[in-house]
Image 1 (cartoon, rainbow, N blue to C red):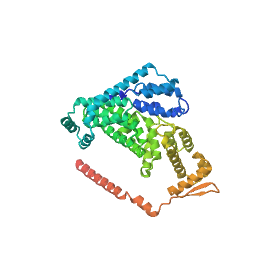
Image 2: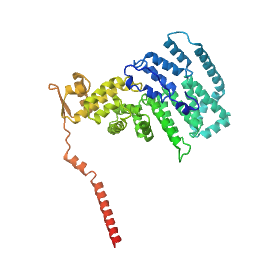
Image 3: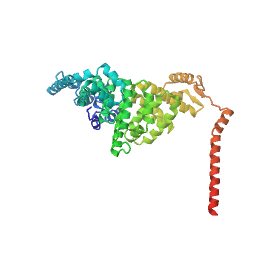
Image 4: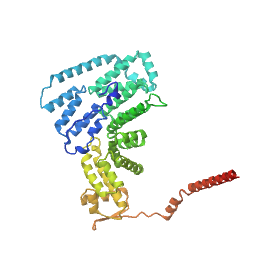
Length: 466
């Protein structure tokens, strides 16, 4: 639940209690829910309710228990009616609904004078002023804005968020974030609440910007900037694990999100440390993004890095998606890779975040298998390839033809014999000379320096003997 003491609230994990059924073995809902705000767990429960992985009543009970800890009373009421197959609500829920409505009305009346201060003109002025202290002083001088009003805005944002009015909460939190300095704990709390609100209203551009601001806010917090305590490091580690899980909503819905996820997870040492220390299951999402990546220049290095990570964390986490790359690039087990792809056909559509990546992943996974297989064979049977790629022969032949055309591969198909002949990539003598002599000058300089060093050492030793 989002409160002014937001960080403390997050540290209490929410436990999803579900009755498994079907492909629940590879479902990460239980693990991921430990790192999410209650409101963010609701979309996950809504999604898995139609996937037949869990007993329907267990999902409804879990969702009802979750909603009863919020002020989304109408949503809770609908869930209760569905679960108990009734049109009547218990007196407790009716009373809670009235209390929630009264609370919202009371907050709206209290916030009316403050809302008048933050008119369109005032908001334009706030955009131009970047320093929180100066901005607060200007508002105080021109409109009589006080510290108590800031506290009231924070409380109003909490009430609106808890009631499911995320747009209103987001607007208040944006103002709060501008009015407090990054060193103030309320700035961090506002960043968390703002990100959650933008995710829930599906404003992905804003959410991506808020994600970066939250990352900076987490990095900035410290009781002593020069010598942070062990407790500070631990708190930052915990918050980065939450950040990485929340970021999944953004990256898998933003148009450029998958490429950004790779950088966010792998290029940042702090985030990589959080994954390896506490949340190796996030490797599933890194693997999918790397496999479907369209950046051919970076993909080779990214594959190498993620395969290395999979090897390191294989003792603590393994699923069909990570096992596919392990079979393909570590064990060179094409039969094993084929089996893992078959399981991925069920795992990926059942994952809340990955469902939109299914076709791209399967296409690129087959491409990786084809490239790896052809790298060690000059002639491959189409029947064998079709079997390895989990396709029928006609579809496999059409797929290979299109691949050869689009990728400009040096390969030919003999349809009568049912064979694919891979061309040999000959390297010209000129290119061989260039490759062999490319580092010649650098090596010569190193050798010369080494000889000079040995000569000086010899002279020094001779003088010492004398």
